[in-house]
Amino acid sequence: MYKLYGSPASRAARVMWALEEIGAPYEIVAAKPHSDALKAVNPLGKVPALLDGETAVFDSTAILLHLSDKHGMLTFPVGSPERSRLMSVVCFLIDDFEQPLWTAAKHSFILPEALRAKEAILPACHHDFRNALASLGALLGDGPFLMGETFTIADIIAGHLGGWAKATGFPEPEGAVADYMARVRARPGWQAVAKARAAAA
Amino acid sequence: MYKLYGSPASRAARVMWALEEIGAPYEIVAAKPHSDALKAVNPLGKVPALLDGETAVFDSTAILLHLSDKHGMLTFPVGSPERSRLMSVVCFLIDDFEQPLWTAAKHSFILPEALRAKEAILPACHHDFRNALASLGALLGDGPFLMGETFTIADIIAGHLGGWAKATGFPEPEGAVADYMARVRARPGWQAVAKARAAAA
Image (cartoon, rainbow over all chains, first blue to last red; front, side, top):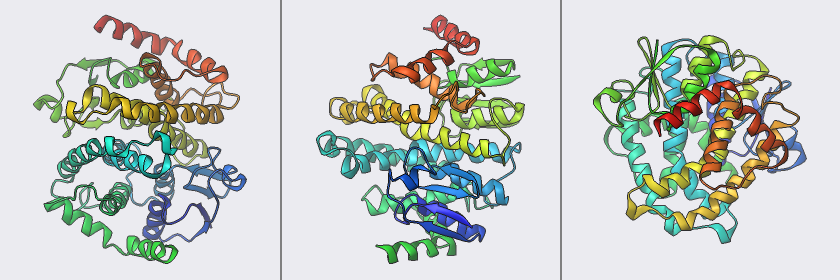
């Protein structure tokens, strides 16, 4: 059984969502950041991390790639044009769609207090996020998903970030992107994770 | 022949480095961001983008994955533990090692002037980068490369970022990480790119 390190409130939620979609059983291991137990799986001491037998994987995106390739679900085979497009979209999500949210979070509660500059950086974060919403709309096209008819790890990352943005007061999507967010977050896979998050809160 | 969109001064340099290591011929296409020519390859209108026959790939990391998988070089096969580790390291580099550099660049010359807050965010960027240097050292271990004896796309990303950090006055690596940066940047592949960058400057 997969051992997932990280709480449902962290980016481990993306991994849980993927495992729900795949239908693979998993166990959540409560391990504090930088604890010895976590460092045995991820030398950097961060969550999420996954233990799959003897193989340790860390960073939520790397874990999504590991699981989707292993199960042949939520992705496309390496060497196909669809795979290269999927990776382009995933990299856009990490570089442009997540970055403003993560920068704002760092300056809200992660950095040492003396280094935080939330008021100074929030306008730029909102600006970048508005641009990223427009890019997401361009990539989505007629949908229903980012890769057309196939629900993939890109939709898991985007759907998770959509909830994060809403919860932290970032600009809201409109039109087709708003419909898309509602569509992916209504899936039973995410609903199961949302239930676990509510129970843990 | 591969068509690479983006100048050697952009993150296209990473793609050039990979193509030099692989020994594959390529042509650099001068295309302005958001031009119609570029949008035909990357709907987001950003460089770098790659055209491989009919397949369009964008974002430097996605392009490195495309090329390394296609040529079976600078990577490991999907399904191997080494591949999952490589992706963990690549995601660390994008999330933690590049992010402070990119945030500082945005606030230096990319964001609209009214939104820039360089003085306010630079201490946090340097703090995050110092932590990322320590993490890089932990991942490097005894080296010589991030994945041990095999030079991979992770070393291309790290080596490129090392030069970017130095050029913009970020904290300098020491000890094993400094030796590592010198080792990867001395490779003929990077030296060829550096020559093209100097010629274009």
